[in-house]
Length: 140
Image 1 (cartoon, rainbow, N blue to C red):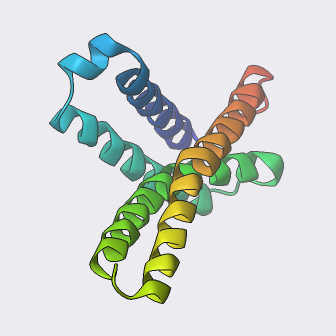
Image 2: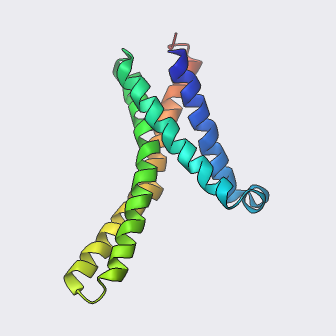
């Protein structure tokens, strides 16, 4: 269980760093470029590790759901950002074919909304639930 908690807190720290890069000018300006992509990749990889650890452990109930929600949101963010970019590029390539263009435009908009709204909300909801469980001392 300690591995899961350590991985969760590393994931939470990488999330806070990414938020800091986006909203705190000092961090974003001084740590741009590679240091912008590295925390996102780390965030996704830690999400995969947390997901695998959660599935291997015998965690049950709301705590398992919270760990699964948190980890899948971290992984999903990265996946949906890539899908958004791929479908945006596809919409530019098939601009002349209206049906394909509209389909690609719709998909890239949907994937964008999932990446920037659904995944962060899921991550915050799952993380908050895990922290509440920790504070109530329900995790051994």
